[in-house]
Image (cartoon, rainbow, N blue to C red; front, side, top):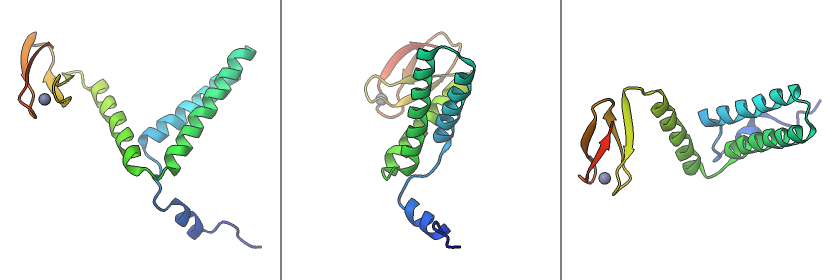
Length: 128
Ligand SMILES: [Zn+2]
């Protein structure tokens, strides 16, 4: 029997492409979750919407995996990881500097404080 897809040709195909990352796993899991939820819902219109949504999510994950724009995909994943970190971090608050958009992390529960941006030295006041 002839092997149509050898390991080599897969490697060649994936060369220069982005591949998988954490964000992709989340998108795939979300797509799967939508598909499962869809099985328990018996409303034709909602079923249609959920089916479309699951296709969009899976398509998005495949697109990211095969994308050649690795820098952009990497940035997306980084943003996601930063968002996750913010979500988990209960001891700090995150602000964007009004001038240069640099993210600044400050401790929570200190009341109104003056924050100095580490990048451009802009001062701004925020409640923590
Ligand atoms: Zn700044």
